[in-house]
Length: 147
Image 1 (cartoon, rainbow, N blue to C red):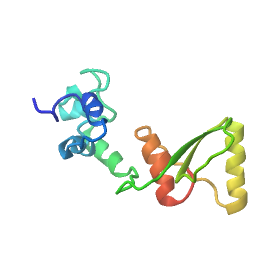
Image 2 (cartoon, one colour; image 1 turned 90 degrees about the vertical axis):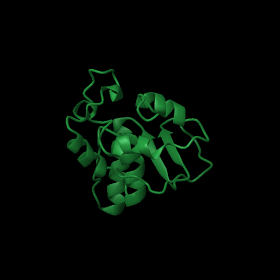
Image 3 (cartoon, rainbow, N blue to C red; image 1 turned 90 degrees about the horizontal axis):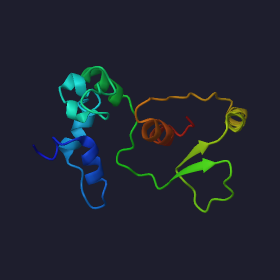
């Protein structure tokens, strides 16, 4: 068994260490749908919850379609992502993206303020897979609009 054939969670831990480059073959297992439709791909070792896990998608073709529609910043070029919560007081940098962690009433106020200034409604987009990196970071960064 090669490194790429081992369970992908072990691979993530291994290559999450600074200085190690993620092999192209490992990344391809995600982008070609193998990891996310592991049952259909005949790769039960990629199931997050064990060999009986069917994956995040029922078919490899469905996984590929979903993955191809997800935003990504290529090459990566953000300088900062800030996770804002209501108790925060001051920020000493200007982040590329701000992710809000607020109660519904505070979120409603901010969305109404956005529409008050721009006249545009918020066009929210959310995938259940890669919701933070694709939809809360990459999409607003690339589109220049809130999500």
